[in-house]
Length: 74
Image 1: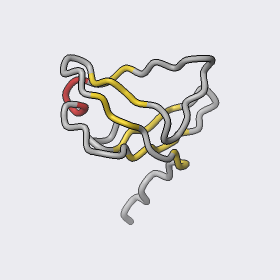
Image 2 (image 1 turned 120 degrees about the vertical axis):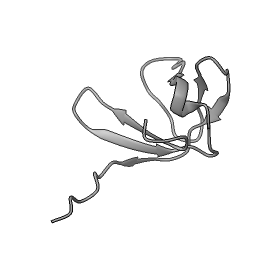
Image 3 (image 1 turned 90 degrees about the vertical axis):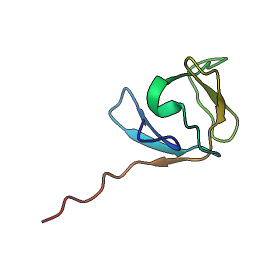
């Protein structure tokens, strides 16, 4: 997790994917989230949601893009 609107998903193969949520999910910064994945281990863009722990807030995923870490200043 990066902030209340951006999540990084770390895959078993070492790849990292970025998802900018459709809307800001303020409680995400403090409590983390759970996600139910039905029918296998596939997570789909624009079709699934996450649920923030403690608050119960529901936030929709948007498109996944490969994560590129910011360039380090020289």
